[in-house]
Length: 261
Image (tube, rainbow, N blue to C red):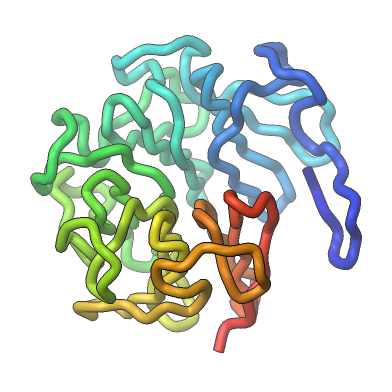
C-alpha cells in the first residue's frame, strides 16, 4: 500500500486483494525496497521469490528466486528481509538457510555473502537473519541477526565472516542487549545504526564502535498502544533527509513516525 502524507487511505501499488503466485499477486510479502525511480522490490516470502513492480505497473517481474522453496543458491528458503544497492544488486536474508545472498541483475542464482553454515553463533553463521541495511560508502552490509540477538556487519566482496557491532550479549533488556532484533537501518548522516528491538518493544540507536545503545522510541520492556509506546516493532525506514524515523509497530497494527533528535 502507498499512503500519502496526511492521508488515512492507502493505494495498492504491488500485489492485489488476494494472495497467489501470478505476476500481479503476492503471498506473505516480507521485505520492501523502493529505489530512486519509485520501482518497488518486494520479498514475496511464501512464493520464494523477489518481485519488482516498476513505477506505475500493475504486474510484477520476478528478479530473484525460483518461485518454489529450495536451499541451493538458485533458490530461496523464505525471505525475512531484503535491500538493494545502487547497482541493482539484491541482498536477501533467508529464514531457513540462515544466510544472506546477493543476486546481480539478471542472475539466475545468488552468491553467498553471509552465513549459510547452519544456524549458530559463530562469525560465519546466522540465526534467522532479518532486516538488512547498506553502507555503500564503506562496502558494509548490516544484518539483524535476530536469533543471536546481535547486529552483524560484513565487508562486501570479502569474507563471509562477520563482526558483531551491536548486542551479542545474550537476550535481555539491558542497553547492551537485544531480544530478537528484527530490523536495522544505517544512517548516512551520523554514521549510526537504528535497531528495531522487537520483544523489548523499543528502537535503539548505536553509534559505530559503541558498546551500548540508547533507546530513542518506545520504553524498555513496556508494550502498549499509547503514542509513546511500541508493541513488537519489526521494521524501520528513515526519511530522505533523516529527520524522521518510521517504525512498523506490528503489535499495534500501525506505523509510527518519530522525529530524530
